[in-house]
Every structure is written in structure tokens, then in C-alpha cells.
Image (cartoon, rainbow over all chains, first blue to last red; front, side, top):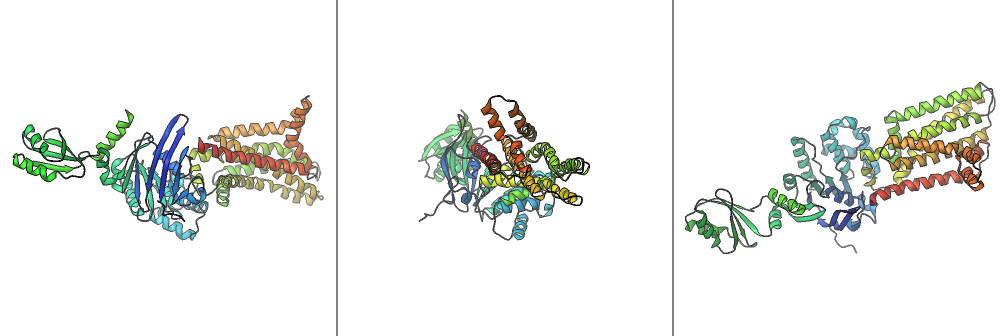
Length: 313
Length: 234
């Protein structure tokens, strides 16, 4: 009866705050076991998207399905499948770590052996050493991990993490990233950040969001190509500018050659073709040695900026 | 629901609030008990209960002021609202937590009655009906003040408004007495907590009064749920 549903499906979600559209027709999906990065500058709508996905806010239009279950129509069932770490971990400062986790355990109505499960989760996020400390006295890094532990309780198939590395020191950031990567083996993770390098280091796929709209949705290594549409090559060639231009231009499939600073050139070519051998031969014939050749002209950073700035014009 | 109730009750005693509320309640009830019962040689606890009304009006806002406002300020409501529990369960859990603390306050009356029983025989049925009245009235006030707490992010604002509303309710019967327009005065008299409480203190468990307090509880808990519902859609 039930078709094999995607793990997470966000369909045409629109959210208005008064007359301002915070989210405009946002759709994306995540497969089981995928680590999906939600990337965008501050205020782009990442947290709003996550709050809607977890049922904290209601979408004006559109639906969110978790394993095929609608979060608005069957909130209990859908929420039980999600572990959510909001931007500010929802911790009660006057409780100890263990008391807090016990409360969340009971709140989520988890049916696993209580003590063992909490011990296990604390082990995973490495907070066993602070279990009897009052949350108020914990450092930011520990609080973040307590929040993550709370999200992990009950082993939900979906983890939604809203900027889990903000405000942490570099070592803690690396720890959390490693943790997320290892969790990605067992859970479907949606992870938001405004730091591109972080998302590209952790995620299999990136959904880029700006001003409430999705501007790109592609596998991490294909993102640059997905944005520009064409294939791009970055080159450094030694030789007279005109000779280099002519030589590269003569290769079949090349659409445009632009000269950058110094000896660098950017070549746009029709996607689907591979012009690298042709360019090598042409330049060799023209006696212009190639010093460097790299696929993907725009770096991820550049494409990110290009997209997000483009949105604000 | 029980998880939320347990946490709520625990949070009163993690902070000083629970102890202060109990101390203040016990102090004043003890003082009134001494003045009106022991010192004046009466076995009737009526004056004690009537004097405590004022204290209850002042102390319940302190119990409820943080129930929702603090959750909102600390953003912990996100944990509750994204957990697989319904809004009704959340509100009921919070309500029961506050109500249990209020019950702990009221338990002291039993001790006073036992002390009295050494000197005279207290009128147990009247005492029981009065206790029931106290609990129902307190529960109604808790529901109202919790609703006020759900409207704001500030504990102070919640407490001040709740105390204001409590005093107004306390004075409602007197106000109704000075209003000449008959139907307005009737309405005020009928929604006055005081008037309904008088039934209980006279040993009458009047169904109207019981239903009145239960309806107040239901209406304001329902409004509480609506506040949360509305926030999700805004």
C-alpha cells in the first residue's frame, strides 16, 4: 500500500511572516542514510525550514513528510522519527546533564532500557564525564553536545541539526564534524550551516538556500558545475595571450576563453564533453606549456558568493 | 505528560521558588491558625481559610509565573513542541506540576486539624469540603495565571498581571455589591470566586460551584493550548 517513500520530503513549502515571505516554494528530498547540508547566509531561511520540518512552526503552504508521514496531520508519529537540535540547544539550566537526558527520554516516550541507552548516548557524544554537573555551569561546547545527545535519544532515523558548530572552537568543530560524519552511517542527517567548507566536508549533498528560495541542489562534488551549467577549466599557461587564446579557441567544444590575472585562463566548455586532451595538444603545438590545469573553474566559495550575491541584486 | 509534570515539580525545588512558596504559605497559615484558632479557643478553621484566600491570590502567581514565560525565553519550548507529545499534554503536565506544589501547600491544614483534635473535635466534613473548595479555587487560579504566563516572555510581567487579576477576582464580590445595575452585579456575583468558595466553607458541596471552578480550569487550559497553536501559525 505504501510506496517506498523518501526519508524526508519537503514539498512546496511557503512561509510568510506578515507580508514577508520567509520561505518561497521550498522543495527538496533526502534519501535514507544521506547527509544533507542546508547552506545559506544568515537569515536565508535555514532555521525556518528546520522549524517547519520538525513541526515547531507550521508552514503556510506545502507539506513535510518524514518517512511518508505528514508532520501536520500525524505530528506524534512524525515527531517520534526526528531528533532535533535547534540553533540554541533547548536545555534547562537548572538540571544536571543526566536528569535532563532522563527528562527528554521520558518526554519522547522512548522504549529502550533507560539507563543503558542514556549511558550509550552520553558515550557517543563524549559527555559521560559531566553527567552530574548542572547544565548552567557547562561550556558552550558541552552544552551543544548535551543538546546533540538529547536529539540522539531514542535512535530516531532522522537527525536535524541547526548550525551545530556555531560558537565552538576549532577543535570542537572538528570533533562535532567527525561525530556527524559517523552518525551519518546510521541516520539521515540534515545539517545547516553558513560555512561552506564545513558543509562540503561533511555532507553528501548540498541544498543552497538564499532569501527563502532554493538556489542550488546537487551532490557536493557536482555543485560547482550545477551552478554554472557548463563545464569549467582553470588553466595557467605560459605564452603570448593571443596565441594561447587562439590555440584553446580552436579546440572543439570550447565556448569561451577568459584571461585572468597573470598567466591564468578560464575556459568554459559544453558540459558532457572533455576538452582537456584537445587543449593540451593544441597548446603543445603552439609551444605554450601548461603549468596548471584544474577542472571546475569556480571554487565552491566563488559559486556560493555568486549565487547569494546574485539573489540580493 | 508525567515527564513534564515531574520536571515542573522538580524545577520548583531546583530553584528557591518551591521552598519560598512553601515557607511563606506555612508561615502565614501558621500565624492565622494561632491567632484565629488557638488564641481564640475555637475549633472552627473558617477564619483561617478566609484569611488565607488573600495569601493564595498572591502566592499562585509566584508558582505559575515562570511556567511558560521562562520556557519561551530559554527556548526550551522547542524541545517540548518538537517532541512526540500533544499540546494538551504539555499544558496539562505543567498545570499538574503547579497544582501538586499547591497541594503540598494545602497539606498543612491537615496538620492544623490534627493539632485541633487534641483540644476539641473539629468538624471534619466541613473541613473536607473547605479543603476541596480551596483546591478547586486554587486550581482555577493556576489555570488563569498559567494562561497569563503563556502570553509573555517575562516572568515579572506574568507575575504582576497575575497578581492584579487575582486581586480583582478577590474583590469581585465587593464590587458587585456597589454596582446598582442589577444584571451586571448579578454576573459579577456569579463569577466571583469568593461567592462560590463560601458554599464550600459552609460545608455545602454545591454542584454549581464545583462545575464553575472546573469550567474555569478547562477554559483557561484550552486558551493556553490555543496560544501555542497560534504561535506556530504566526
